[in-house]
Image 1 (cartoon, rainbow, N blue to C red):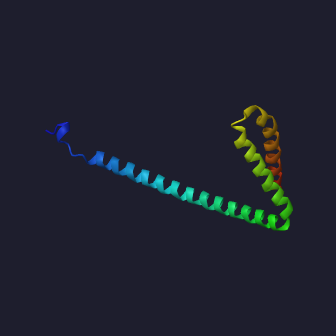
Image 2: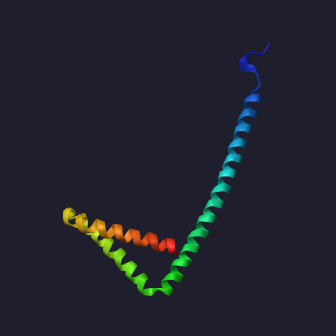
Amino acid sequence: METEMNRPAEPESQTIRDAMRRGSEAFDHTKRAMSKVYDKSARAIGDTYGQAVAYGRKNPGKTAAIAFGIGVGLGMLLLGSKRRSRMRRYGEPVVNALSHMAKEFVRSL
């Protein structure tokens, strides 16, 4: 008569093998899905970058003004951490306006 301790571990090892196989399949599926998403994102970013460069070549004045405005806004934000009250009064509207301009710029591409 076999006791529970003397039984072969066949069913348990099969369960472990099944779980490992399912885990491996799930990992492979996730890896393929992430690869597809990465490729799509890289293509979209590349396309957007190309459009931004083309826009910059066609409109160098606007591009320089946008870059200057972003620089001023970032400078105000960084400087604003030292002088909070006065810079907040001027910095936030400038940054909001620049953000709006940048959004409109990207939408127009």
